[in-house]
Image 1 (cartoon, rainbow, N blue to C red):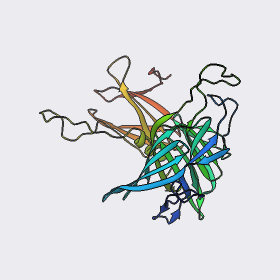
Image 2 (cartoon, one colour; image 1 turned 60 degrees about the vertical axis):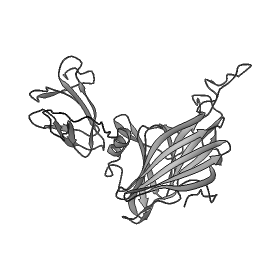
Image 3 (spheres, rainbow, N blue to C red; image 1 turned 135 degrees about the vertical axis):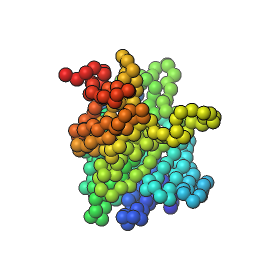
Image 4 (cartoon, rainbow, N blue to C red; image 1 turned 120 degrees about the horizontal axis):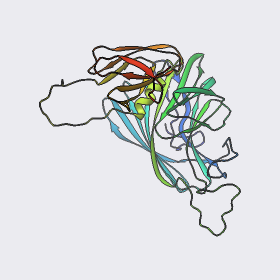
Length: 336
């Protein structure tokens, strides 16, 4: 059913049930809360937005796709003059929900947050930072994140968590058992408190249509064992198909240019060096535990075995002919 806690047609997810582990994960997910926001454009002096003035409602749902591997619902909800459309896709063999979000926002001096109200007890909130992850308090304070946030604790006595992956939004918060993703703000453009408008026209930011993608990933255990960072990269850097005409050539019909065989090491950069024909590869360890990566590069005589310390960022300069490599810094200079 699609409803909020206080409306039979609120346009949010009321239940996610993990059939494998027999866990009811949420009480409300993808709920759109409208909050008062009278701060300036940069939110100076504000650390927490928590005054809810309304929720999207008047929701309708329509099944628009039903096939052997997935099904998709179109869920539409409204608040005053604004509208939201959710395309929610449930997969047969993949334990996540894909959500495409389209919002037509017309509010002023309001903030829109998407709420994920879980059944998790004693939860810890983790957020992706640059080449790492950070645990923060679940006190409702606004914090930055990159591609994912996660709340992990226990449901029914067993370790369990919910990760929210996204490709466009970087403000978050957590309050007790609820994760919040900041979708938009609508203060006046370039308003700096205590500037007064005077006779000049003022424009409101974040007006009109915008869209982004989410994945909701319920998981037993913690975010490390669920491979949340890798899943977030897969959402943000999806594989794409490039159609080419048939022609003769020396390469096989199927070939991987690069393979980083490790559960917790992610390769973030592959490029040519700035000062020669060498290949530059940068990777980092995502789970806070030592790991060994086996890197296979097309054309090299053998794979490379590289050790990573917890959360270590490592940049390699590789000879494309011999496969010899050495670590370099972020400027591609040899390490002392």
